[in-house]
Image 1 (cartoon, rainbow, N blue to C red):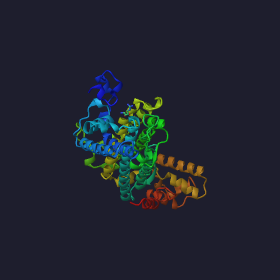
Image 2 (tube, helix red, strand yellow):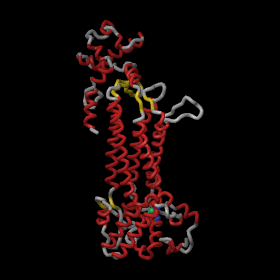
Image 3 (cartoon, protein in one colour):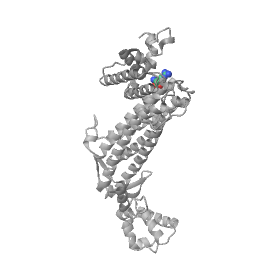
Image 4 (cartoon, protein in one colour):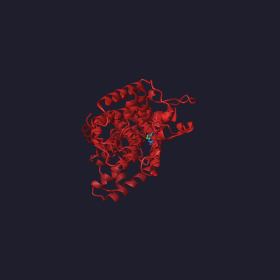
Length: 457
Ligand code: ARG
């Protein structure tokens, strides 16, 4: 391409070095913004006509031309050549090639600096919507599993050491709470994405009599940005989105980590169906939780994207700088990764078979009801620190005698505290232990059922 044919080529004598063309081009990845770029251009063009900056005839020609370009891009009929740098220039050049000089009026009163901000905002607004839809689907899968497992008891852990028996439903619903917060955070982030930047032009605004509010109305933005310099140099909303996505990935990763541990032979709490596992090329007996592992791994990748955008932005002077073109790959990769993980995880949950018997057996082991003994003593009037000590002595005694707490006779118990009565044996079963946790937000069956009811679905 001759240098004069480039939209910015007027002041140049020499053609762009091929290497520079390749190095600066973003078309390979920003082509995914084409729909939004055209949507934004149509709104911009309608505003220019309404303000009398271009004529109604010109508006019609440009809008029709842009729609044709979009149709042809979607049909794969347009080749994206590197010498046109980015999606904005490809679309504009194609338009001008097709409708002639009128097409050259489209870029009036705007710059690629505010245009790219608009494109990303339109794109991200849509994607956040899709992602929250996928979060809702995942939440439904979790709720369905929680309903099914309302009678399943498993050991709850702290420090990966057996702590207290809990309901599997309660455990699963813990993940649902995290996802509620993720959904809320993304919607909150969307409020900041959903602000219309166009009309800031390169950085200063424009002398042309544009109407930014009208563009916002056409593109369904509730407000417009208020400072043109900030507008073209702001990528906070990208960083914020990637952070929110990172946290969401972290939650999925922790769920996957549980599934990975639980599906090991050592735990044997869950079996993932054949259709959601893979084998080993050398060890014939293997069935691996690769889906869960990949979600865990991809979490690292999203964190990398967050660090990338924060680092790109941290040292650039006001206002727009080309560094900011580096925002797109981390953003797109985050969107793709999060969507893929949410989708596959929702499906995987329906493919888990929990081993209820094994969970229950393990829940009873490891003195998991020791806290219930301490609480029983508290109800008898013993100060908690003392009851903790008495129970600790009981556990030590059991370890020495190789016994479990429920196997101790009342006489043995009374050697540690004279007031023990038969009621203690009721406290020692895992079912009673679970169902006694009636404090708000606790694991008692009736509390969990109430929460399930509140959650509806
Ligand atoms: N491709 C550029 C980006 O992604 C678009 C804005 C270019 N602006 C400019 N003055 N070169 O940031």
